[in-house]
Length: 134
Image (cartoon, rainbow, N blue to C red; front, side, top):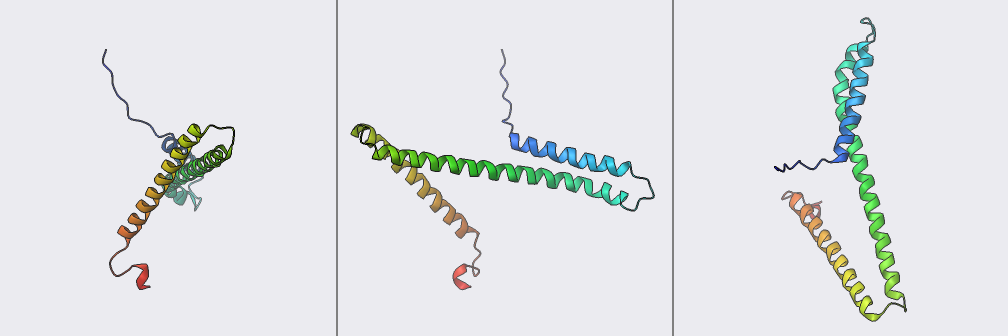
């Protein structure tokens, strides 16, 4: 039996595409149903593709921001639960040592991301236009 691999599909991109197609197509259909004498008909037909792209982009942007906000919220909840577990006197010291290792690992990941972000910002700054010169 031959196995084929399919590319992973990003649901947010599909959702954005569907939102754009339906809105742009709807606007174009409505514009085409206007009488030829209507002065807005040609403009509505012209902006329909732009509106489609704009709505697709906006949908993906909103979805990504909501996903990131949810992820940060879940990470903070996990951090709080970890701290509470470390304070719990009923948890054996062996388990607390494992939890401390997780804590240190999470903090190292956070610090590494912070350093990577600073490096990206510094790479974007053009010579002669750094904040120190302003």
